[in-house]
Image (tube, rainbow over all chains, first blue to last red; front, side):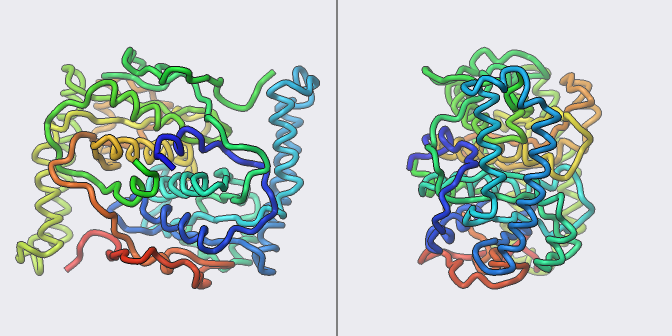
Length: 227
Length: 227
């Protein structure tokens, strides 16, 4: 697949078929992840795969439990069942249905990738520069092979149990959990805010009039659907 | 360019031609960056470009000054002029020459992109999941158009001055500075550790025998050249 097509159509995928991912494809996806840069090229990223063995199934159940609790709390807190959430065709209601499906079927997702980072110094907000570029390579490669996924942080809600179950040492950050599988729905164009709102030229909020989206680009507001 | 070719050949570029980057290409590169995911799709990434106006030149001079001081300290501390560093053909000496060129010519690099993140909560090590995937998209897109760059953190050494000069508010993280331009040298295959050292299956340090690099892959040890 052409690079820009992959970049423009790698949507967050939250509904999956249960089919396993062949190991050849996993190797290709992880090879892509490992080509990413990291600080001083230290390559301290590590990828722990959770597939179908007993330990992995236990780990996925831990994460799934957190996901369900977190989504239920968010649905109430953010009012997904109120306002336009009552209109089944609204973006809000569609998002709510996708999330509900995601968490209810979490344990059926064939692969979870825990993207980890061996810390060589105290945690900082910048350490992600050594692991999240690899996560993006992983998602792009997966998309080009017909798979999909999404970067999540639910694992943090069961981190102590996951570390014990999987033997992940204290000096290692679990930076992301990426569920991976074949999408139930379809890939398609990613929508974002207009480029001119995201790009500044020469200083904060200095307009960049040349920062124009390609013809035909459709836009989306930021964040989860609101009202 | 095909996705996997782009991923496998996006090297860190540290030596640049001074030619400016046409605005059409910048728009394409930043459009790619903006397609990246971010937490809850909040799209709080912002890209501040430093090009050729007076303010941008001052900002680049600030970052260049830090880069020179940091590299001089690192060259001494890490012994780049000792051991195999005396052998001009050693990886260590080549790395030292590239870094020396990088910092000495910093102000001539046509574009710096400050990848910023508007913080909607207190800083955390996980916040990078909302900005570094965009940095990787940016580097891949640049590479496919014949440009190159590298994720750096030198701006942190002049952060107070940069915030004042560029008007970047306190609640915004400057997550990376990415110099961009046409490479003086060539792109080519990225080298990393063997995949089997980076991928675990079912638990920490559990081998993934299927995690095999493609035939012909050449490897590199992690980190800066050592001795």
